[in-house]
Image 1 (cartoon, helix red, strand yellow):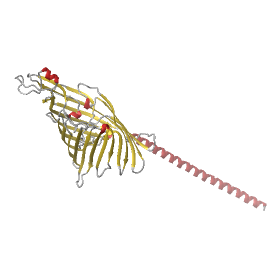
Image 2 (cartoon, helix red, strand yellow):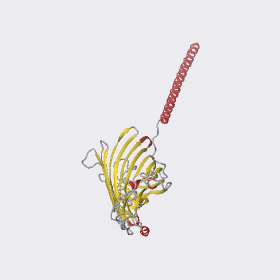
Image 3 (cartoon, helix red, strand yellow):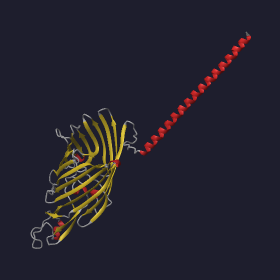
Length: 442
């Protein structure tokens, strides 16, 4: 009996040992497989990470329009542009080549901050600074190197979706740029600003004198614009209505007891297909009683890209000297995509201005602007020619000298001499301009 027990115990021990060894082998195999799976998964993640890194390095990252705000509830945007051009000008007496800041759309830097008070009301602020060296409208052969640093906008506003927008600070008055709206896409090169509003190059004139000789009159105006409708930014309080089907009215109370009103529209005309329209008008009155008004706009056939625009602006009344500047103009344009860089804009136009007396100016221009979407830039060129006359007013010094312009009769044959203050028309030199430049926006 004892032998039987011993045998059973012996075999039981052997069976247990075999079972234990079997379980240990299975466990070891399972653990090895789990470790291998984990290593494969880790390797796959590493390969995917490296692929993503290579893909990110090879792809251009989109520009981030926002900068870090000191307050997480306010969105802050830094923006600006640099716009430089080379201008070739011939004034009849001289030719000049100048590097200018194209203040048809000047170099600038701005910071915009916007916070949302609730779902209907936003509170915003704008600081925009303009840096110009050799600004196009103020640079001529006699004053290259002129420098201007100024605040374009220092503004704060409350904008309610249903009630409109109230702005306080330095910014555009209600009627600002009422005569400058058009659809060519090249207006910052040449457009409704006119010859006297785009280039600071001045013209000369040969003034006939009563003794049969001539005198050279330098620095004559090349056009006649109503006062301060181009870039009329002042310290003011301004209200804009909510947009109603693309239309918006505005009113402002300006510094020095002036005021202004304006109306703009942008969109598709009601009931008209394949067309878009742009319209603006403005009126202003200064505290001294001086007034001016303007209207402009255009119509574009969206399918073909062709557009036509026009403008008229005028002083409201003549000055004590009889001057009442006015200007009108037309432009034709085309916009489309000729290449993969971006849209191409072409424009041609004509401007005519006068001072309400005798002097006039005529300007013809053509321009092209190529958008470079990948660099947020414009590459452009334009050419213009303007000619005309100026009104000369006889001075006391000319009366004393006895040999004067503005005489009547035949020169040198007992002409009737002019009196102080008498005015006459004098032809000036024509001015040729060619402009090529780049505008980089950020």
